[in-house]
Image (cartoon, rainbow, N blue to C red; front, top):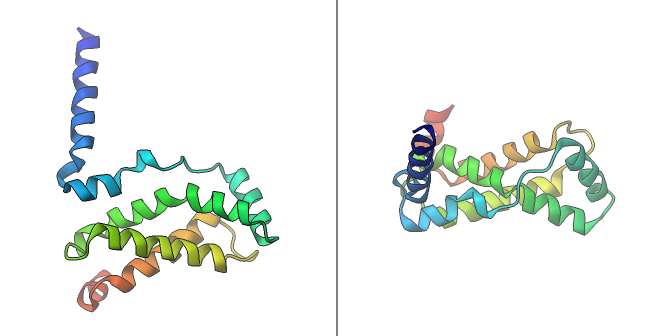
Length: 137
């Protein structure tokens, strides 16, 4: 009986997730975080960021790929304010913010993901209309 309830609960979660919680087909594909690599651990992220600062392009690419979930999370946060903007455009803008964050990251910043999330958020906020930006602050 308990296994049956767990199976039903898992099936309901899969159904809700596959339906994107009310998003359209295009948005479901873009907002699906299971297709992106898992986030890195803090010590690995720090090591890769140091290698990136020394000029290692492979470390930069790894950091870029493993922080794409951060872009999706920031998109989800501001999606309700940007209904008129297509999801793939919002994703590209978030990726530009991620890229700028990787380029401007220095040794003075303490936490890598916090710095990247501010850069991504800044780029997404630039896309939003001025009335929405004013209401957020």
